[in-house]
Length: 372
Image 1 (tube, rainbow, N blue to C red):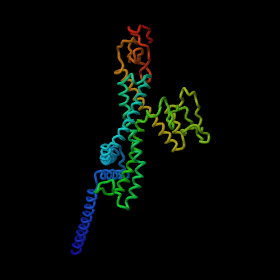
Image 2: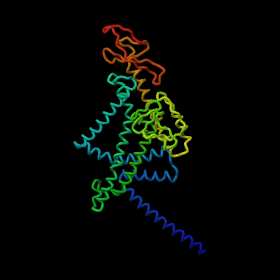
Image 3: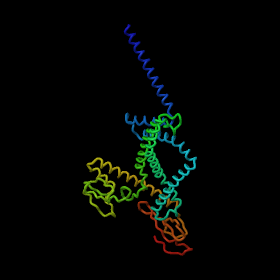
Image 4: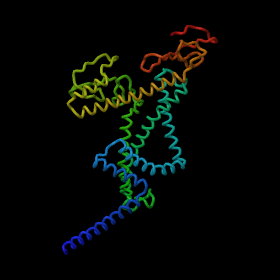
């Protein structure tokens, strides 16, 4: 009987000690959580989710979306007040407007080039299609500006961390933060790591969707090599690096025995490149080659989608079915000036339309023969 009471008393005593320990720990965790600001809480949650991703194998698109959403919310909460502070100053407003002007100039130029690539004439004659091309370019320019901003932050943040370390012994490491801002250096380090992760994630997403397609001349089975665009059959295909041509900036590690053909007729399709890469014995070379091929295919598909959508818009909405200038039956026209028109007809080509600049044959100028 006494032994039973002793055991029960011991169990109750240990239970009280455990409850007091948990209560103290909970109070400490609650005090720590309350001491953090909203951006720090977002970084803390994202970091905890990142650790859980490896411990419990929770990798999924939705999980990563939620994790990076916390990072973006935290960054926006910290950056937005500083942006508004810069916007309300004259130098800051001038800098922001300068950045917007540069981006708008490049976007307008690339949109005009997209219209010219389809029709063969200047985009000035197609204002509505030029505006649509600009809208189609916005996703790509959004990603490229985001990547550039993240890259600049990633490169400049180590300088900021170094300054914090220098100012910390003098008690000035909180110079650019609110008085209640705790864990300045740790937060800056975590922010830097998440910014770098966002930078690589943005590049990965942009590559997967092919939104970088218009920043390189990708046409007809071409492969992006360095800063140039070369046909796929011009890529050096070698098995021994010692026999590689020094003139090629980059070489895909394919098997030997591939015969070169006429440059006007590319002999390598994407499927053939993948099959050659699958036969390679070097795993790293195979992975690199597959990444290049997949990125190129996605860029081509994204670019082709833009061209098809813009070509359909030009034919259905920008072009006129009736005109003062004579044109071929079942065709549509766009008046370039008083003497020339752009005649658009449907064909079985890749884009589905054929564009031809012909003279304007009207009652005022004179009648002539309209070529079919």
